[in-house]
Image 1 (cartoon, helix red, strand yellow):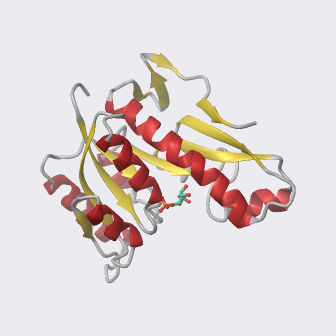
Image 2 (cartoon, protein in one colour):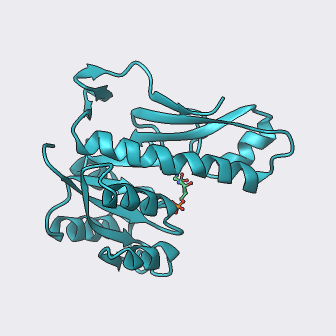
Length: 218
Ligand code: GAR
């Protein structure tokens, strides 16, 4: 993607990752224009934050559709209609499972951040599950979205330590600090075309990645 890529960011809640990506783009750290921030939940706090950042922010409410596929078709239509059409679809706390048609349409340009060291702890309540398991290490992962839930090729991870006395809130805050660093970096790698999805693998600079790039604390 030479020049400046365009992204749409999908959120469901607070939108702190969206804000971190928007800040990196505004500061010229990544070559990205944000066409819109869309939320399936009209009450998402992140919509107000996006507006205050001068971004186009819009709810595409998920309530009332007969099926996941029906909602996703409307969402995909809204994304296609954005001008300019987005090169990249960034899931930033978008708390819905996407249907196969949506994932296929945006394959290779659809990314997610997940609050665990995938393939460990796909799904919900990752911080609680890490604490219950007694793990000493936790983190977050940026990955391409494929049909497998939280299972697409990962290309950037941050490690954070689990400290004695941590609870869900403290651990989640430590992971989020790193999310706000690695997600803008990951979106930048995609925007510049350095990271791509080919043959079900993530590639960096024309080479298949044997393991995700690593950041964070040990
Ligand atoms: C982030 O911690 C992100 O990793 C997580 O939701 C949070 C959204 O925070 N995503 C998932 O759990 C996806 N499975 P934010 O709205 O402040 O960016």
